Structure formats: structure tokens, C-alpha cells
Image (cartoon, rainbow, N blue to C red; front, side, top):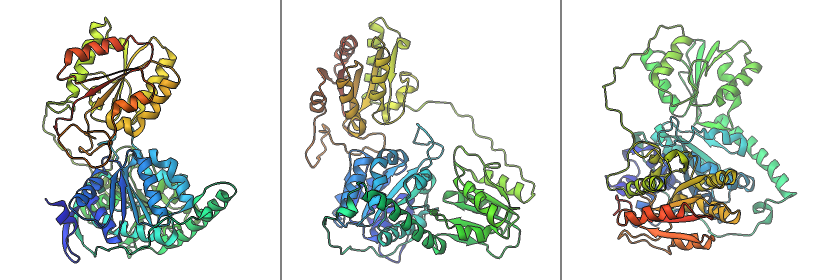
Length: 556
């Protein structure tokens, strides 16, 4: 499939779009000018497709892979301050990284309209560390959040988010989940706009500088904005009531992918129950919700993960309908993605119908762990480390192995079994420092990928040097951001690919951080030397770094 031809199909046509591609089309129809991202599934396709569009000669926008999500957002903020229509894309963990810049950005507000696409991953399909719910940022950041359900809404809501941001000069989060980002459905295409905006940064101390006492005024101005946006939420078409004429005495309130599960469940029972589908999560259209629940006896809140909607609706019910029975997480799970049969079961209980979820006989399959690609350079690294530990007279249980995010996460599975902790990108070194401070004689080997090192590992290495601990760090330089789809990284490639722009050498950064013991080895070609270096460096009293350099097999 030619992604460029698909995304640039003319106005008036219909096409099958992945949710992430529909976001891109919506951004183009809105006239986006600046796009930045750090690759993270389930949002990766947004950056990958924009990169392909740029390489194909589409020049209506600027695109970059940034070194991490905070930098991507900061770059986007700079573009927004310069009056550019801006889109920044990331996965849920990326929003954590970017939050340091996000919260004051909401105070300053956007000059050029800015949409922040955040993709959550219920059930942790590609997010092993935790099952995060971005909706929590609504209260923390006082930021508008809208949630599409399907590909058509991904396109339409993206355009709406730009319009909302333009009108109120505030960044808007477009929250996706894995099922929304990765589903495919038919969408109707609109006109791709060519922006005609005066670009450039104009000094405005009162708008762009968050310092007291002005920042307190900004806070009040932000709250005032949200009150106005709440009025928009009350009348917005992205909040819809389905089957409004039903007199069943029961209703359902839902949003995002949960709406599609609800529709499937109602069709199964052939029920016409009024459904309030919320496109706005923050600010909630409280008046609309109140009018919806006032005549009801029972209402079911269908949402994935934490019961944020349920809590707000219970508060509203106390005021407008104290006798209303609110069903939610008493019938639906708070962990993992929802399934249609779970919603069916909840609806059956609410309307007193008999229902038993079908028992599905799954085929017997041989259980296997996720595995590194055949020919992956990490095989030699993990095998070499285990051999070096053994030849040093140690057992695996005598050494703490630090892990991080990337292909090397797979070291936690058989046959490697050498990953004793894992939290987030770059954390393998930061945590290693704390463990070594607890016991300097504890043997510790910390693995970190090249992309993770650029993303968040450099400050941790500086801290290790400055505060004098002595972990052995294996810096795994496969010269690509491999796990999320082989996106480029800031280092110097040795893969035959032509990369534009200046590149940096990992070893120069490591040396600049103050590391004295550093060696570059290609484990697959010089396996014995790699094993010997691991044994030698395990004895060092100060931090040591082995750069294990060999390109990813997928690009070599």
C-alpha cells in the first residue's frame, strides 16, 4: 500500500484508514505546519507516515523525530509560539516525560493551534511497565481532552481539536487507545488545507513567561478559558445521544472505544436504549449529562480502566436524580481492555435479561516467549555477559542485571533470564546508581539501548560519574530505534543508509560525561574480546561503559 497516495486521496472520496492515518489526514485537512514525535506504540504510525510523506516531497509541513517526548513537545511549543499549526504525537508514557513542559504550556496557551495526540495502551500490548490512563491529566493539567471512537472520528476530532485550540489559544489532547489507533474503517475525505499564516516569534512577556506574580493571573485565565470551553462542550456535536426517544428507564453513558463495544452489545440484545456518547472528556458537559440522567432509573457507565466518568456522574446524580442507580465498575473490570461480552453481561444485569457469555474453545498452542530476531546482535551480548559472569566465578544470582525499554527487554525471558528490574527509558542506569550506593560491592550490570541513552540516559550517566558509583553499563548500539519500527536515531549510522543532518558519536558523549573506562566492541565478530572486557570491567572501582556496537539485523 502506498501510504502517500492513500493519505493524499482527493476530497469527496472514501477510503479505509487506520485510526492513526486518519489523525494524519485530519491534521492535513486542518492545515498542520509542524509535526514532532518520539516513536512509541500505539502512536508510532503517526510519525512513520509523516516521515514517509516528507520524504516523498510533500513540503506543506515540517516533521521531525525528536530525541524524546519532552523535547518533541518543547519543539512543538516553540513552533506554536511562532504561530504555526502544530501537532505532537506520543504514547502514554511519553506524556509522562513531556509533562514538565506541558503543564506550564497550558498556562501560557498556544499561539498557533496545537494538538497533542496521546495513545494509551489498555491491556499493555506494547506497554509492559504499567496500564496508564491519560484521562488523569485532565485534572492535573487543566487541559481539554477529547476521545474519538473510530477512524472517521479520528479525522474529524483532529480537525475539531485544531479549531478548539485556535479559538481558545490552548493546547488540546486527542486521546487514542490501541483499538482506536489500530482499527481500520471507512472515512469520508475532506479538503486538505494549505495554511496561510504569518509565521515568526513575536515577543510577549505577559503571554510566554511563567513567572510570579503573572503566573497566578495565568492560572485564573486558564480556569476562565475552561469555563468557556465547557459551554462549547455542552452544545458540541462530538457529544451525541443515540436512541433519545426510548422510554426504557435505563440509559448508558460511554466514550471512546467503549462506545463501539456498547453498540455491539445492544445489537446482540436487539435493545433500543438511550446512549450518551461523550467525545469531550474534559471539560465534561455536565448539563447535558444531568438532562440525560434525570428521567432514568438506571444508568450504566461503560469506560475502560479507572472509573473517572462514573465518579463524576455519581456526583451529578446526587443533585438531579438521587434515586438513580448507577452501574459501572461493580459490573465491569477496572483492569485490561473491555470486551463486548463483558458489556453484554453488564447490560443484561441492568435490564434483567438472562445472558451467559459463550465459552470459546481456544486451540492448543505451544507456549513460547517473545524472542529476539534471528541474527540480532543482542544474542551475542546476553550470551557473552552470562559467560563472563560464569568465568568470573559468579552465579547469575550474584549479579544484579538492570533492564530498560527496547528490544533488550526480551532479556527478561528465556533463554536469557537476566533482567532483574525494568521501569522506563533510561532508568536502568539511574536505578543502578541507587543499588550501588546501597552496596558498592554488589555486582551490577546495566543494559541500555542507544535510543534510550539519547532519550533519557545521559543525565543518569552524569549523575553516576558525579556521585561516584561503579556499575558496569552495556550500551547497546544497534544504530536504530528498533522495537518501535526501525526509526532513525541521533547517532552515526553504520548501515549504508544516508542520513541527513549532523550526527553524534556515542563514545564522545560517554567520554564527555567523565567516564574513564570505556571500550567499543562488536560482540558478534569479537566475542572473546567482549567476554574478556566484561570480566575486566566488572572489577573496576569506578563506572565503566562497554559500547556493544553492531547494526540491527533488520537494517543491516
